Length: 269
Image (cartoon, rainbow, N blue to C red; front, side, top):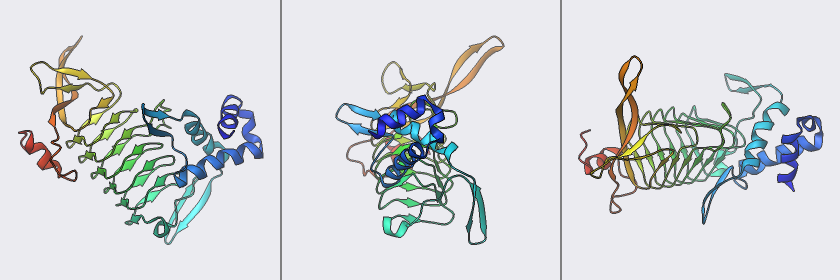
């Protein structure tokens, strides 16, 4: 029922003026905040993107009014309320971490000074490290480490078809960027400064010949930044890519440091 209402509002934006429509959108946000709804969720056949939930998030902005929010000596002016009651939720939040209402943050999560946007899902045991950003509707699994300065992209600006998905036990190294719906599967390790977009070449160089993929990092892959030569009218230039240099051993502690994972694959750090 709620899905049908949201789809109707999406197709006819004049309905945004109706109180009933606004209440339906706010109910979706409430359920997202509690983790009762997700923009994307794992199923037996892979990940399912709930497009209608994302649409509700997009339409939440125009029905909200700008308000001044005061937090001690700090002042904000925005449309979105901030998430509250962290102690009840079992979440550790270090100043100046900020999360918007409508983001689900599971018990056992640690938020260092960081930012989690509306519609995101951050599962238990995950650390969002200093100045890391979890974009709108991004899906972060259990026991993930998002290192300092990591940028996980959202779906709102610009509007993307699918959210970024980071599965359980992934280690994302410092200053990595993962955007445009890229999917990082379980237990992968991304070395510092890896940049992954929908068009980034991800090249597996562990065999005799390179294997190129896009949009997905296979489970337990160890990935570092790389480059390849591309011809342009003005000459040949190096273009960034990502290199899969090995597999994280199943015997390795899932909370292993990035340096240990890279050393296992004979990469200097």
